[in-house]
Image: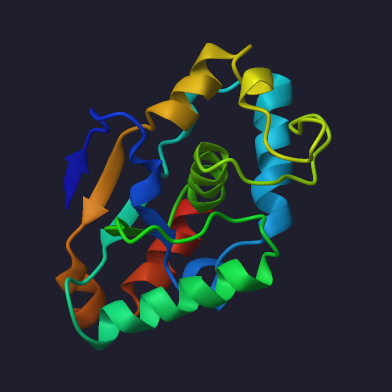
Amino acid sequence: ACKVPNQLSGLNHLFLVHKANRGGLGLSPHNVHNNAAKIEAVGANKKKLDAAVAIELAPLGAQRDVLLIFNARLIVRSNGLIAQMNGAERFCTVGCSHTVAFCKTAQSGGITPESDLADEHGKIDRHKLSTDAEFTSMVNVGWDWLIVPWAIDVKFPKWAHVAQQALNA
């Protein structure tokens, strides 16, 4: 595993969620936005994102296809609350999944059910988020992630499930 700093603007678009997250449920679209509302209410702190762990998306093959299909279905079920895939994704999260999903959705101009985060059209109001410099940085720049090589997912199929449970303990 290696620590990958987000040194380029807006790397949140590189992330999907691993199929082992939340016992195979992936993300709760409403929790994506509810958690973001809580962050906005109390103030963002990147130091609290110490569970930012993701695994590389396999470059080809069945392992990659399974994760892409899983995310495509999750996005459809979210009814617009999770950003569409963009084709640039390289990693699947096992920690900080809800937070990065919100930041990716905010970057893409997505909708939110949280009135404290929404503009008059129900879209995430990035101007409201801009009152918190740390939150703005999380949305626009991202944060450091521990990235695990994709081969671990193939060689140790339960790794993501165990890692996700440990990170959320």
